[in-house]
Image (cartoon, rainbow, N blue to C red; front, side, top):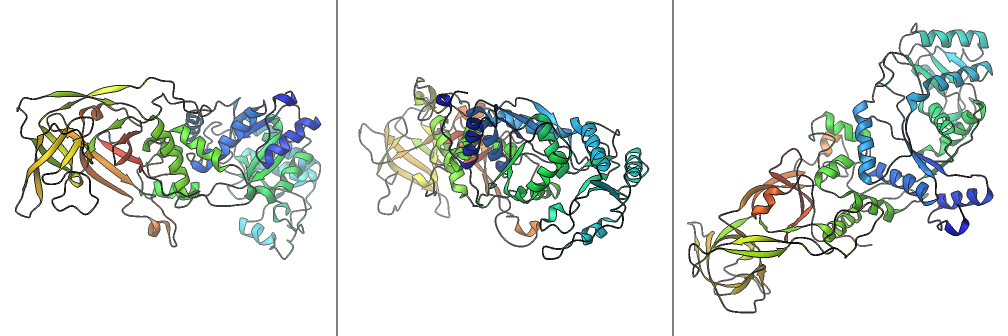
Length: 549
């Protein structure tokens, strides 16, 4: 790529990439996004995915999707399918889709190479014994009694591990590095373990599986990855990453670079905890709209473009920090404000009769359909435009309406500009009415408002309404994070009120909204029809932001 065509770097990893390209160290950028298919992607994974795919594209390279499926106990083909769907939903197309299991034979051969070099040995110690031998941060580890086995014996035992003659945990293959290393990861780490568990892709072919620290650098080397970017907790693993690359005689030498993972307030960013929520039934699945998974956010009604915009806005850093969840909600709100259709809905309805109109009066009111830009959903790269024509729809108005209860007050406070006894208010997109009376029940609660259509041309207040004859009955789901910050077990931290459901009256067109499309209910918030409960609408985000940059 010509220097004039290359875009300026915007973070420290892009600085590295540009230097590698300009020095000739790297000819073509090759990156990867390598999730483990033991759960669904969440918003933290989205940041890593957006960075890898976008950065590779920015510098004329490519980015692979690779499933690190080296642990058959926890992994599932369904998770692979869902992850690929999520990546495509975000707007990214992998240059290739690969699996760690594609390379099992190569990894086994690399392990044999280490044994033949005298750099790996079979250990029959128990997991607890191996853990005790590793030492501490201040004390060196101790050599295993099996560390000095001959190459021949190690090869025979490793064959025995592969043939099925060893029970789970009976033996492991360890790299022979340095039990006195100040880096705990270099103290003879486990390379292979025995697992008599069928794999979702290879079935019963294997009963030994490579450890992540061994598999990952070999996968990067085979795929020609130039910049292997991972979260900061793997910084101490980098010497081991390089050791495996160097000693397994790979042709390509990838480079690992670490960055700070994404943390968001009031948001669980651990796949393990999210799985617990699913397992204990605290949510109705990985796609529960209270979950920070991409499938949960999608079901909630969050547009993919908003997630990508948020990830780009947060950017990349070396230091760990926490982002205010309100910043994510602002990105969602900005996207929906630009494109969401607007509908009139009354969550706490009270009847309103226009008494000076004939009973059979009916009028079709034209209302604007879309948001500020009113354009189709873009790709994650494209910003909104204002080039599309404004779309409108017809809404029926009769003398029999519903209005929001808080749009009428018998004794209003100072500054109240909606409907009051003998006061004026405009029906949204229509004429002005004057309140000429109201009815109450025995407790004094207003049950009906009586109004007359007037020829007035000015009114301070505007109220929304729904035609009673054609109103749709819907349910509204109000959502909050299912596990906020706090101490104690996950069961103790769960907000038992994280989901509440209320009823509402909506204009007839709401009945035809597709699942997942984010729309605005005037003065209430942005909502989307739920995939599992089609008569219920999830609140995606409130109308107003509390975020301060």
